[in-house]
Image (cartoon, rainbow, N blue to C red; front, side, top):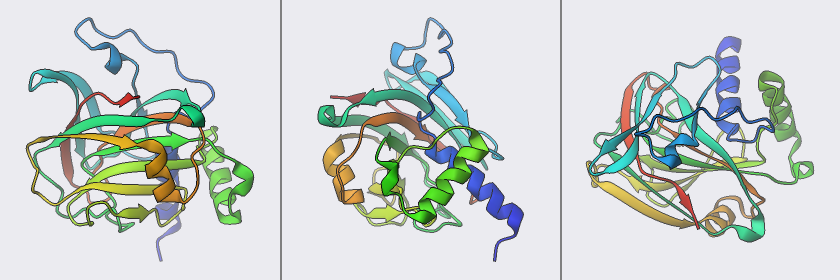
Length: 239
């Protein structure tokens, strides 16, 4: 059984992973350097409690503006707040490129749950429907961070082992679910482009209709496996 300190660290990390723009008070946006594209200037780094931070930076690569992520035994996010009401939800389009996978990572295993690339969507919802266990976890998260977590978080991931198109539930709370968009090494070194129906993916993952979309984040992490990860992300667009 994990030591109490290990459980505390995991709880802090989970709290951070759920805080995708759900906070009511968003830090003021800092002015972006002239060479930074407008879309990248609206994003902010977000550290997870007790974790070294992944480095995110906007740069030119392959003829486009991208966000370059480098993780070394670290986990943090690059996020922005927004609000799209349920009746206005359409598609999310994004892209990523990965040169190498972390062979020790597996998004299905709580002890090795790292991913070279993730795009995360956070949703509002009816919190009265939460299970007692989830209410307890949400109260813990809010106590640790001072901010209420979103009702549900949907992640798109690339995993070296999990089956492509699989839906993976988080072992600590069923309010976090993942859809595996890529599996294995076939498309390494290539830009992979996606356009996903948000409502359809949410219904498939959670078995219910989504609430308002309240946040989006990028996340490259290698803290559980104590490894390294590097990735490039293109613009995230909603239509």
